[in-house]
Amino acid sequence: GTLFSERKINRKNHLFCNLSSWIVRPEYRNESLNLLFPLLGRKGLTITNFTASNRVSDVLIKLGFNDLEKNFRIILPLPVPGSGVKIVDDLSVIHKQLDAVDQRILDDHSTLHCVHVLFTYNQAQCYLVLNHAVKKGRPVFFVNYLSDLEFFITHYQALAHQLCRKYHLSGIMVGDHTLKNHDLPLTLNIPRKHSLLFHSKDVKAEEIDTLYSEIQVLGLKPV
View 1 (tube, rainbow, N blue to C red):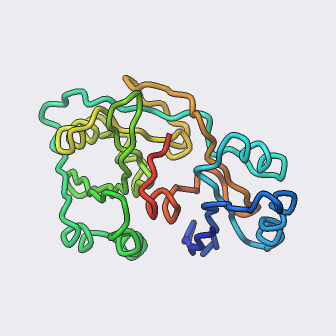
View 2: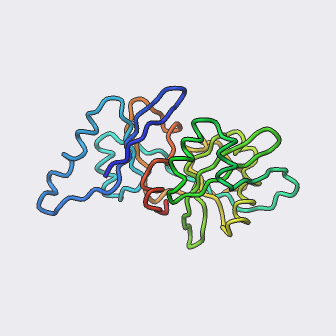
View 3: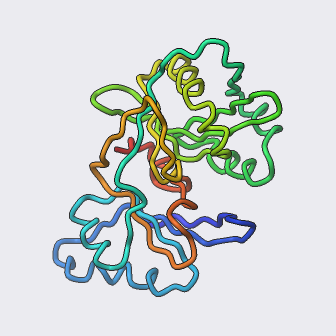
């Protein structure tokens, strides 16, 4: 299964292909990689796989795939009095306040298994696309995409507190590559159990998010 998308990165369009279910009858298992080779040979294509088993990950890494990250952060809902950050979850209101790139993201994911929220503070804002997940048996949100890293890093405690209170969660899960390896004090640093993999000659790890993937289409819970 493949999910193709076109993403704008640094004002340039890039073609992405997310690998989903890989199903081969037992008698043809020796030919499995022949399903992948046409994609690997396609110029200008960034390939991602966010739900591979450890066995499949080992195979993909030997074929030149790389890890997006080794760890992620859990942001706990610590109280932040008087932060001034406001949350908007009405899709029609959010849509009006986004630029064209983020409007397209919202339109493309509005009917899928994800949650859209917009945080505002004075004239600044940050749009988040989130998925429900479970960590240590507790419900959390996984951050697929955030539109403004500086806003997020500045207000991450207020964002987590409001999200957890509103959606009855225990924390917010965000990958190191999404944070561009910025440190977040008072958060938990957790090693990944399963790899987030990509293969690209044109796009860097920190420029990749987990949108347009089976995570949203199938409603998977990333770990």
